[in-house]
Length: 158
Image 1 (cartoon, rainbow, N blue to C red):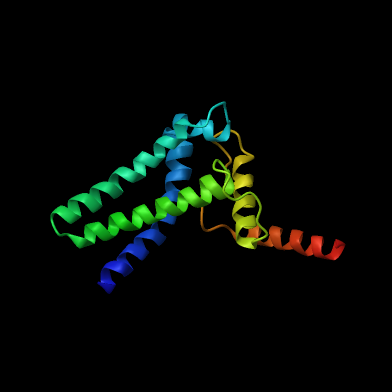
Image 2: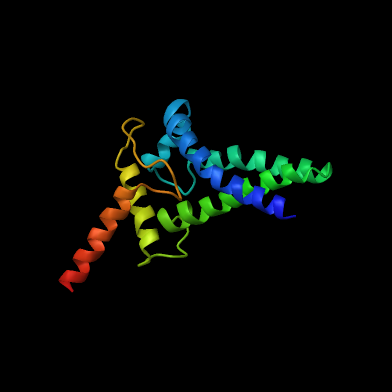
């Protein structure tokens, strides 16, 4: 049982690498036509970019369903790790960063400030070239440093 839990957590962590690579080389590459409306927001709630939910959800669902049917718990663990990352992605990207769901509007949590700033820097590029910060949960030190400087400046001015 501990093996399957550890495998699920490992897959969850590895999904950040998969997401970074997919975002940089596929979403900003040959599938830009699906991702473009995420950078150049139009009218309406849904985006073509939302199709990536299915691109990741289908393998997760298949691993869980087929693994359960054939008592292959390694497959179930892999699917569960992907699904857990999908849930984290939804909460972090859709709810906290883009606030497509107005569940949380403000936070003084430094981690949330950092991921929001990194994502803002990603979205300053409206086309597919010259992007930065392609991950979601893990961001570069320069974003942490920037938010720390901003927080220190606000404290000194208060």
